Structures are given as structure tokens and as C-alpha cells.
Image 1 (tube, rainbow, N blue to C red):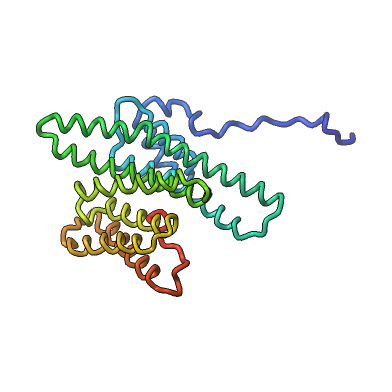
Image 2: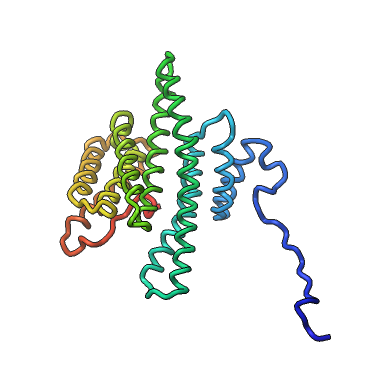
Length: 279
């Protein structure tokens, strides 16, 4: 019997969407467990879907561990697209390649818009409301400290994803301005509430300095910010606790490496490392 397309029968492919798993969304703990499982399996798109549900779960805010899961999920998904955009940029233009570049850029934009939506519409407003409640209550100092740390974390993430958009869509000044203003707001809070050796404060200074150097093209300001953060951390080196020692010292090394890179004349055109690249 001769082959014909009319006689071809296709077997339906079973859905592999992680959200179709029975009872996954029945308990918050199920989502956390599966997010960690997806991370181990390096299924970062699945991890993003799970963490998005977790963010939208009513009545609860993310713990420090859950915030890190959120960051890891989107960092890995966006990291692949950023690397693809850099690689494709080096190739000679053609009609087909231009269309492919647009496809990858659209994917990157969609991912950035998704996480920015979670941050700006849910996570940041919620933590700000909790901070206000703590300010009006007695005996909430420790909780307020944790909430201020969460706020810096979310504002830093917001600045990061605006920066990623500004990297690719170079004519869009809105993302440049949003990255700068959000990083600045985060740094003001970090300098008031987090010690100089805190890894979130150091990571914020690192990424903000990279933004000054790569996006805003302000080498003096980038060096000033990186040096200030490094010197402040060095002066309080004995305050680093054991839990954050590795993260803090790694970021301090990156700050120093970037300073060396940016102040060496022959390497002035090279980009610096940020926390995303380091991880």
C-alpha cells in the first residue's frame, strides 16, 4: 500500500505540563517540594510555573528559601535566552536569522514581563503592606528586619530584569530608567537595614555597578559604587556569619575583579560579572 498523508494517523502525545499533576496544587507544601524537585532535575521552565503559583497563593508571603527558589527558577530560564541573544548578535544578518533573533528576543521579553508582573503587582506591594503593619505594632523588630531584607531582594530582582531588557532592546529608555531607579531605591533601603557584608546588599551593589558600566556607560560611577561596597564590606569582615560567608566573599571577589577590569585601559570595553553570571 502506497503512503499518503490522508492515511497517516498520529497518536496524541500525553501532556507533560507539570501543573497537570493530580493534587499538586492542593497544598502549598506540595508546590515547594516540587519546585525543589524541578530545580534538582534542571527543569527550570517547570520551576517557574510552580513558583508563579506559589507567589499567587493567597494569604502567605515567601520565606527566604522560597525567594531563592523564585530567583533560581527565573535566573536560569532568562540566562539561556540572554546567552542566545549574545551569540546570535555575533552572526551576520540574514532574513531567516533576523526572524530567529526576534523569536528569541520575544521569549526573553515575555519571561521578563512575567517575573516583573509578579514582583510589581504582588510581591513588592505585599511586603510593603507587611512592613507598615510591623511599624504600627510593638515587638515586631525582628520581623520588620526580615521584611526589609525581602523588599531589597525583590527590588534588586526588579532592577535586574529591567536591565536584561535594556541589554537587548537598546532603544528602550524606559527599561534603562526603571533599572536605575529601582536599583537606587533598593540600595537606599539596604544601606539603612542590611549590614555591609550581607550577601543581598553586596549582590545589589555588584549588579547596580554593572548596570552603570554596561547600560548607563558611566565608568566612574560604576567604579565608585563597586569600590564603596567592597571597602565597606572589608571594614566589617569580622561580622560575616558562617551561613553567608561563602556567598559574601564570592561577591566581594567579583566586585574586586570588576574594579580591576574597569580600571585597566586595554580592557575598558569588556563587560563585568554580575551575580547572575557568577552563579
